Length: 321
Image (cartoon, rainbow, N blue to C red; front, side, top):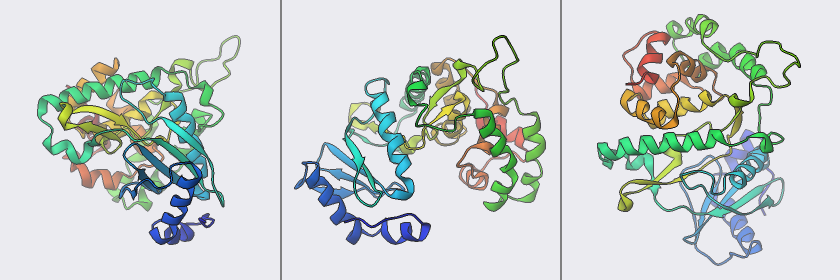
């Protein structure tokens, strides 16, 4: 029996503790008809995730993040077979006990692209970049409206306004130096962010034109991509859709530029050519500051840019060749 987890303190006490989690996962597997299969917890992930035998994965969501479980279930069902990169198939999903939710899904082959990356030859990296662009284009081409009752943020302009209002405080809380903090208001004031469509008859009912409302992964990066070295480093999976949103496609390029192409202008250019559209670096830098998981001090430590202004940083991280 898994206990109720609502607070940070309860999360820290329960979620990492395998003496609590494993019996609960085993009991759930028995309920789902896959009891007796080897059960092995993955080291990665913010929520408990287990390999169930060789072909299945069980993902558990405590009450504090139960909505994430609903989001991932809905998105996986929507994406089944829709992308050029495989995504897990949801076999069973729903409530468990004490607010916990679960998804039993197919296990995709391959290894994580992030740890594999140093071994990937440059030509294969370039092909992977193109494959990523094609996958993103397919994702963003899907009609997001069937998921609008589940995925946020709803009003994109209101979301941007909230994120802009808290941008400086958010980065200060994460330890950003004052010489960067003081640049943020002026940079966002002139950033080419989407605006409300001009009034027309009849008045538009959505904050963005339909073409600019897309299903977003929001964390499309090496850590959520799988590859198979035996298959010529082909991408074999895209995982982790619980942070999915509906909004401006450019928002998805933040994680791409920072964590997939990692400030490589040639790789980002190849990816965006395959995607079919390029984006202004200033727009992507603005979304970097407005992203729900934005942590500019961490990005600076990871990528070690030479730039010392946000304008120059936009070109260094999101420029293309």
